[in-house]
Structure formats: C-alpha cells, structure tokens
Image (cartoon, rainbow, N blue to C red; front, top):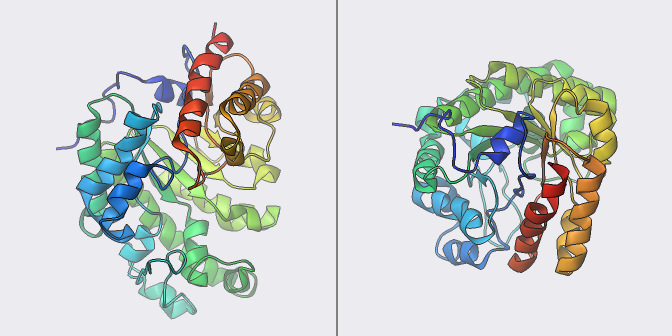
Length: 355
C-alpha cells in the first residue's frame, strides 16, 4: 500500500516553500541530483545498463536516495527518465552504451503513427516506476519529501518526432507548421498519458511533482503558448493532485513567465537566464519560485560557489516562496564536494532572509 502524500516529512521545508508558507531557511535540491557526478551512482551504473536501472525499483530507489545521504539535499526526486512514457505508449526506446543518448528508431512521421499510440495504464506499463516510488518513500522514512516527475507533452513529442535529440528540430517544426492538426492530436494524447502517469505517482506516494519542458525554449513565444504551455496547462488540469504541489520548469522561456505562472503550477522553476528578483516582482505573489544558480558555477571553488548562492538569495530577497536549485541539471563532471558546498551554503546563508 502507498504511503499517503499528506504524511508530513520530518524535514518539510521544501513542501512549505512550495506553498509559500513560512520557513526557517530556504530549502535546496538539484535537478539531476541522482546522477553521474556521484561515484556511488557510477558504481551502481557500472553493473547494469541505464534502462535496467530505470526498470529495477531497488536500483532506482538506491540512486534516488544517494543525494539525500551524501549531499544533504532537502528533497528527493525519483530516478527515472522522461522517455519511459513514450515507450509505454508503444514506441521502441533504445539506449546504446557509448553511442549518445536515448533514441526512438521508428519516430513518428504520419497521422497513422499518432493514431497507433496508446494511452497506457501506468499501473501496468509503468508499474516499475510506481514500485520505485513506493519503495523510495518507505526507505526515506519521511526524512525529506519525494518528488515525482515527467516530461512536458511538447518535450516528449519532440523526441518522439525527431527520434532523438536535435539541433535543428526540423521534423517537429515541420509537424507544427505544416500539419498543426496532427501536432495537436499528438500533444493531446501525450497529455492524457502524462497526467495519468503523474496521478499514479501521487497515488504511489510522491509528495510533489515536476514537469520538465526542456525544449519549449526553441519555440517562438506564440508557438510556445500554442504547442507547449497549452498542454502543460491541460496536463495539470487532469492530474489528480489531492493537494500535492506541482512545479513547472520551462527552459529558456522567460519571454512567457507570466503565462507560465498562470498554468496551474504552484511553483515555477527558473533557468539561469532569468533574474530571480525580477521574476519575483512579476509573479511571486501568485507562485513560489525555484532556482536558479548557473550549473557551471559548481566548477568554481567553494568560496565562489557560496558567493553565487548569496547573490541568488539576495536577488530573491526576504520571505518565503523560494526553493533553491540550479538553472538546469547538475553537470556530470562536477565534484561531489562542490555540490555539498552549494547545499551547505544555502542552508547557512539563507537563514538571515527568514527572520
């Protein structure tokens, strides 16, 4: 049986900040915190391939909890991959060791390809992720909250149409500009799949959710609203949240910050290109903000990292509604001691902003 999301963790700073409630200090976690920068993660990864890690609840749980134990973050995010959803919808997912990132050998090219896609039952096709959520929640023993996540419909569609990462995004741009009805049909179907997946993660015990829109920023503002933000909003409307806070991260989408803040999320996560102080002035009375130190700052010595942390804290200013994070995922060659220095700096320096 899942543990109810409403059970309060011993350290609930992250959840209180999501709700813009008073906190003693700013909570901190890092996107991609369960990953290659940790030797302990690499030791697990050396034994099995990436997809096996994702599909084995015990391994996914182990690496999810590592940053809590080793780095001291205030929230745990379940280890998985956004592309497990398209795979569950019927697409073949391939990850070849040492040959780039994941790819779909048979990308979507026609309306019939879209029509063949299924809206999966997460309790069946994605049960291994839900089992990982349940196991991780138990193993955390309510030390910190657990976050479940998914890719945005637009970001998933981009991979499904391109077949892999892309520089030009030719295929997906041809889809939205030449066959917009087909694009909307695809995005609507993905939205239903993502909302069911996130709802199932909440039911399994996730205490917060985050939607990653990695590729929204490659669209012009109007197309971003039509093909990305519209379906993030639809997804959140369909998720059975039961009071669980939702975070939305749209990379390189500062042009639409006010619109993103109105999509139904409790928290807007900012990339490093946005001034968090100005963002607070614009939308801070409506949503909490997450971010937004440049991930590259973690290559600096600890004293420089601390200075960067202080600058972000000062820009946000006094009061609640801030979750410290990076402006994107932690880079794989960052030293663990530098990640710990970031967390320690936030935990020590932020207290004076909450008196």
